[in-house]
Length: 394
Image 1: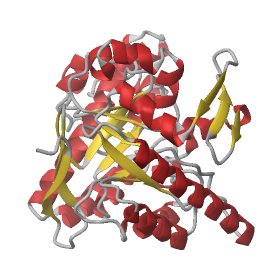
Image 2: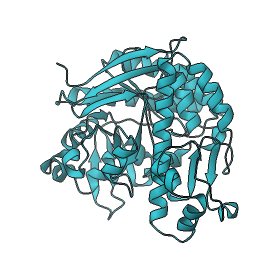
Image 3: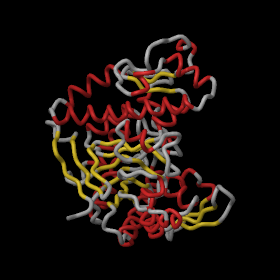
Image 4: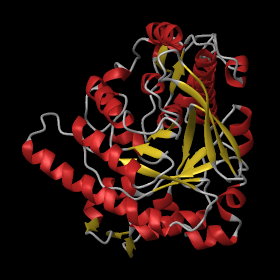
């Protein structure tokens, strides 16, 4: 039997939103699924047992950071990521491409790969498409991705931008081919990455050509980096249309509730983002009525739970006033509890989406959920929630 595989179990009546099951050596994933980010092989401040309790199916760990500290060889000797961190469920690792992009001042790129200096002392390193796969195989994740190259999407892109993006697209395809040829472990599902910047035709071409390379799973990268929500939706549709319906699609690094719901509506199966964990550490919580900033003075004596419709242990036990007190007092329990609530909220959000798809009520559910959720106290998430910052360390 194939150690990794994907099956579509149900589709919405329009044929786009779907429920699936992704089989891995460390258990199955019911999709659409959200992966919290555990940059350093840990979701910050939360234990594996707590993650399991709120319904987390899998997590993402960062190849770049784990390659630098403690090193993939150390992790391999200690049982791979699963043994090293005590997590028994599926793990996804990224390629390190986004971190190299965000630390571009420390990098020198060529066709061979990326030479870079470590931000933790300045030591010299080199990451090629082949080395990227080698590191991820040593880490032992269930789902891995190829090395890619991209840049932020300019507001007013012109011919020069298109020519430059095409160059990045072509190199990403060449690196994808090299990465796929370098793979040795059949128990890891390798995702090819679709790029193309802010150009719909390049997105479609990238998807078609990545598919032609023979990948069995596809990631959509480089979004949430400057485009408007409407433009993002058009780019996502252009990238998804050429991809095979029978294979999993992964939207990299985006994760507001709006992002998730709109991407599920277009046929995305997997997500990762730092948003729920990062916001929780800074006092922001997700509710069915929008996102709240518990640092605000109006919550000082609020006896209500974070979200009256949430069934998580945090909402069952603690008031907004108490949680605000913990955050204002810099008590470490506060960020932990808000992180747990936010993760429980995200797990329930996608559980509800899966249920609506199975009952062929997704369109109705989507409209109702988004109309209730509205904006938030930090500004409208639909226009500013997915930025480059959401892709960085959790």
